[in-house]
Image (cartoon, rainbow, N blue to C red; front, side):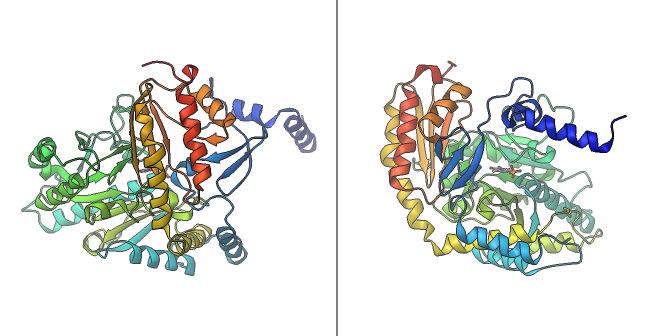
Length: 454
Ligand SMILES: *Cc1c(COP(=O)(O)O)cnc(C)c1O
């Protein structure tokens, strides 16, 4: 039998013998990847500003902000200071029965920054969980209403959600059940996810003339199913991972109106769009509407820690709290983590202090001038821009490993999916760096081996 000492020695040796990237390929599961035929992973040694330093020697501009999160760039002194100072005080305590300044400060900031009716904050650890929490709040809200008004609602009423196609709300089961049925592979999960209602994706583009007629099916779904509907959930203005589509604010306004008319709660999922990304602090502001429940995440901590928040109105919170259950049935272990809250506070301070409006406006203008014209390219089906988001929809599927390799060679980190090459750079990107990103996209569009046909 191997002694503990020998076991440790042999583990140590095998670590030395396996190169890190080989180990990664053999044992480490990456997002949406096969473990038997993994796509290559690039090794990040460090990161600073907009740059990732790769183990292979290249320094690349991260045009993805690590999936929308790193708005101030990497290794920002103010954020690093906030998190290290907090670590020296208290890194984590349970949130049940205990509280602390970083969480109180953060919730105060969120209440101040968001529209007035959103008064209550529930902190959690990731975007998907924030969506689960939002859905659970909606269910508990109607559970309480039904208990107090049994003549109006049956127990089985108000247990469904309505949403739109091409949405993305996360990967946990409840969140997945309101993602686009095709992208979200609902067929595979048919027997294990709850079934909800789907309206067509919003059609009129942001900036185009509003076409009221696109509301016909949405209105019909509300009219037919409102008795069953607990909530309507939507990503305001920009549908992110479900297709990078940018739609007309009038659509969002109509959603609010229909929710009011039919007694359905409105959940706005601003996990991707929140904190300036679309040119407004929150994308709901494009339509001047307030949801009943708001989900925040991604950029909340400037990309330093995983943290999310679900906010709601006094009405939602009070109704849930005055119900028979008397409390909201959720409480993650790492709820309100002080490190995450401290760095979120620093990130929000920085955002406000650093004049985000000007930065986003400059990025948007440059994207309009340099990225939109790519629509004339023979490989390109469409281009679209809002705030610090740029999308190039191509005509053929991208060859992922090839296009990724070429982007790295060209000094940029862009991770396309399907037919979408899209960027949402850190707000601190310079005009020269942004030009380099757009030039890299232009270069790969000319290269046939970056695409694999329909
Ligand atoms: C990323 C995202 C989520 C899920 O957040 P995670 O932190 O990945 O769980 C939910 N909704 C939207 C709109 C998102 O962009």
